[in-house]
Length: 488
Image (cartoon, rainbow, N blue to C red):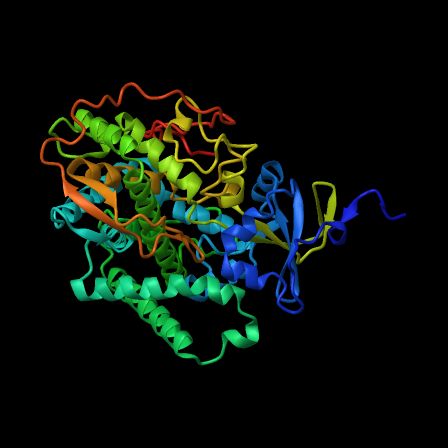
């Protein structure tokens, strides 16, 4: 006899304002963050329609964590990852469950704790070089500046050298074209996505050029097997002794997919995180002054180095809070590989699940004054593993999370050591919602810190932390360089 005590997905409430044929595509395109936050009143699950298809939006942190932890059933997939695969293929961040474990084993050596200080030194140097090109009074497109910084740092980390200036300029432009197209392509019905519009042609050209750039670098590296002590050398040399099919190393196609994955991930999301952190400092000058004081005290005239990370407590909390308020991966999707039950609801295989870090990070029952920038909410409190998920969780958690955190903290420190930032104009800046929660178009004004900036402001006397959910995270030996631990 069938079990009738468990509800089905059809019994879940449908989010309001669904239109015939389009479903919730229009409100998602017009103001996606407002639409997502309108669902926060649903404490567990709610149905949303993406065109003719229906997806289940998870609004509960515990259920969200269940989805993350059971990646065998709740697999990477859905409209977001379908579009990303168009660019990076079956890389680590997009591949399906049957491919993931092998790829994770092959990529893990590239992010071994022993390699992080070397990567951090590259980014510290790139940040100091970038800050040296600015001038007092400059008004900067801060996202573009951070993209240039992280592109240079990522290329040197991955390929032990920067690209020629024109190639890097083109790579930046191509990446911007690709990333800005993801979200619209995700919302566009399949029949319309293939139309040869000028926008589609630009997207295809940018994708092909970026792929060709990476493939050319890989071909050169295959011809020169010397260990260059960079991420690509580690990927080329990685061996999976547990391989069941004899493919113990990454093929050229797999290597290209992983390189594109780490290039786009290491460049774009870190740049966005830095831009949001700088925006938050510019609009909260009291925190900026305290951060300047911390930076002056910690560096004390020395060159910025990854060894400073344990002492950069406020810088770490600023990055942690920026990731809470503006998680780059603001929405994620999963697809069920088989029938399953979640929260007392039966879901059919093939169903699409939607998860939103943005929604969870701004729920007032989970965070005190959730819309307020308050880095001191993390004093004495580690991020809750269910309520704070900028990097996801479980086996599919971002493999480069500690890498990205170290990059952002070091770059932020290099910037505030030399510059003070202020807003341009009085209008609040709104995110540009793409596949990432973009800061594209954000301008900030620079003032040179001629007298040490934060002198006389004590960074050692912080305000009391706001009450937050806290589940201490386990720490991995050799990794806990940052005072706030973002680990599973």
